[in-house]
Structures are given as C-alpha cells and as structure tokens.
Length: 501
Ligand code: SF4
Image (cartoon, rainbow, N blue to C red; front, side):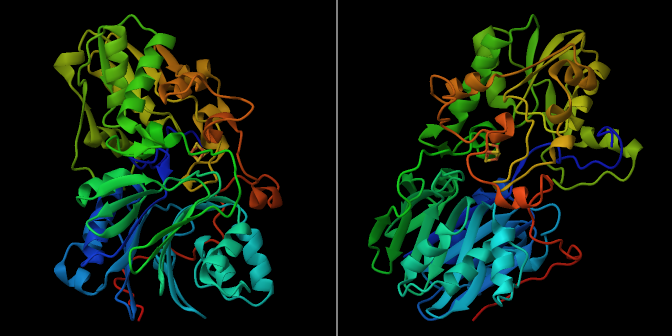
C-alpha cells in the first residue's frame, strides 16, 4: 500500500519502544513511588500500565489499559496496593497483544510463593519454547512472551529461586530487562548483551530499578549505576544487595536507538547524556551533509537536540519553524484521507511568517515509513519555504527490530524499499541526507563502528542482529512481529484492577 494513502495514525511514523519497567524495595509507600516512576517512563509505552505490590504477606496487582494517570492517579488506586515492595510496567502494543491479559506485571503463584515480573524486551525464541512447554502440558494465560519465562521458572528443577531464574533465562534468547518481586525480595536483571536498558538507584533506604534514570530523578531518587549486561541483582528485605554474573562474559550490544529516540533526553544511557548524544549527532550531520540554507528547523520535539547541534556546527540560525501542539492524543486515528492532512497540522503547524521565502534545513530524528516526512515537507512549502532540505539524525532504518521495539515489516520501511534518491523524491525534498553509521557512533563518544565487534545493537540500520532469531527462522522469514498468537479482539473497554491476593 502506498503509505501516503489510507488511514494514518499521527504517531505511527516512529519506532515505538514497547515497554518501560520500574521496581522499588524498602519504601514506605512503594506503589506510590512506582506510579510516579512509571509516569516518568510514559513515553516508553502508552497502551497500558500495571503495578504489583507486596506487603510481606500478600501480593496485590492492579492493571489497566491506558496511561499511568488513567490508572494510578487516585489515592484509592494506590491504597489497593499496600506494601514496601512494588514493580510496575508501561506497555506499548499495536497488533496481537493489547488485551488486559497481556498487561504486566504478570503474576503467578509458584511452588515457592508469589512471583510477579515486569519485562522490557522481546524473547526471540518465545514461540518455539512455548510450543515445547505446551506439548508438555503447560497452560498459558496470555499471549505475552514474558509468560514463557514464568513457566520456565515454575518448571525448573533447581531448588533455589535465583537458580531457577538463571536456569529459565539460559533457555531464552533475545532481549530482556526484568524486575521481579518474590516472597524473598526483588530480582532485577538484563540480558547477556544488555540490549534493553536498566538502571539502579536509591530513594532513602529503598533500592530502585528503572528503565531510565529520568524515573529516578522524578521520584527524588539518586542514580547509582546501570545494571550491567548479563547481571542479576538480588535485593533482600534487609536491603542487602547481591550481584551475580551467571552468563559469562559477552560483548555488550545495548540498543543505539535509545540515544537516537527512545530515551528521554534528560536520561543517562550507557554512561552518557542522551541529550548530548543527540546534539552531537546534529554536529556530525552538519559535517557530513552541509547545506546552504537560511534556517535550521527541528521537527519537534524529537528533532530539537540534533537541530541545535546542526545549527551550532554550521553557523546557520536555529529557529522553531514548526510548532507542536502538546494537546493532541497520541493515538488519534484519522478517519479519512481528507482529514489526514488536517491531522498532521493538529500536531505540527508551520510558523508561517518565519519560514516564508527561506531556505530551510529540516532536522528529524529518523524516517520510518516516511508518511510524516512527506507531510512536513509539504507543510513547509505551503508556508512559503523556498527550499526544503531534509537531514535525518540516524542512518536509514531499513530493517525490523525483534528486541521489543514495534517496527513495521521491512517492506513498509521507506529505507527497506527505496534508495536515498528515491526517498528524497518520495518526500519531495530538495535534498535528503542521513547521518552515517560511523557518524552515529562518533556522536555517542566512540571512534566509529567496530565492524568486527559492534559496540551497540544497530540492527535496524545494518541488519546485523546480535542474537539468534529462532522464531523468525522457524517461520522462514515471515517478518511480522513475533507475537505468540493473535489476540482475538482488542479490549473495547477498560478492565481495571485485577487484584491478585
Ligand atoms: S534493532 Fe534497532 S531498535 Fe531494535 S534493539 Fe537494535 S538498535 Fe534498538
């Protein structure tokens, strides 16, 4: 289908991080801290939110579709979640998994007691492992890949809980950051390559885990360090922290797209300010793809730091030539082709008197399907821009992600089906350029990409996947997202407060 036709979601021309996770142990009102932390991670997932708490005797879970504020804004909702330990989750999901039964944390009563897990990532052999478990008699409650981990823990023959968790994780491949609440304390871990982020902090005497440092800032906590790739951190009820490295040494491959778009710019990712990385990408872009122009204009908000860097390096003035409305719902679906053009202006509008008669360098963080880029270029021209040059603060996104990021299949990615000249013609820009893969690596503080041993996961740009993709191989190249089964129907109404005692 021509991506310029048909219904269009304002926000579907970005890659979406599918989850954010948070955990706290040793706090007087753990669920309240968790709700606040999840709110700071809302950009990582807006479809659903959930929290499981533990008061020393019982586990309590509340989950709901929608934003954190839809589910945890009231004192009553927090009062349902007593205890000093809690883990929580925000989730983004498009097809095949938005029902309440897939909303996390997932909870199970296991032989050793209650177990709740919040997972960020994607298990790329989940379908294969699940089929084997079902063959042996396992009964699944959800279509989430995370439930596979719970079943593997439940059926592990090791007597100790931590060994069961390690045993389970040895059988899965892909990307996972986990925060688990158990009757003995909290376990947090990252997959051996550290594809998805996880950091550790302190809030008074409490220990906190979160997908991003911004969640620690927002709760008034203190950043201690990142959880290292392949590390399992155990925290007991006395606050004792024990670190384990059961998977041996692997060369880490954290997701470089966290620097480009997923993380909030006020977060620290992989020991580096995300804001600084984004600004530096703009610097690299100005060096690699200079442009004779009058103004540097960001596509707000995500293009702003790179545009500042581009402007500083090039000497071309930075101006807000596009104004973004902050009151547009993220999931507004355009009902018709006519309304579609009005739709993009609900979110972005040209600052007409500023851009009229000017040569503009537009800076965006990425091009996914190209639908938004087409409309933004058209909007600049309608506002009287004399020339529109498009610069992109990431390399062409030509490959799907199987590590917990919602990506269109390759045939729907603009860079998956066109070369750069064709993309430029498609978006109707006067010129188009992307930062190179080495430029991106330089921007995050490295000398360049080490082709023999890449320092990050960059598979959506290079097709170089750092893990096996067993389910994809089993499906012989079917590039649809590896949801385990198709959800029968998207939940039509909110199902609040499933309480697990
Ligand atoms: S494929 Fe891209 S989005 Fe996915 S983990 Fe790797 S770098 Fe991140």
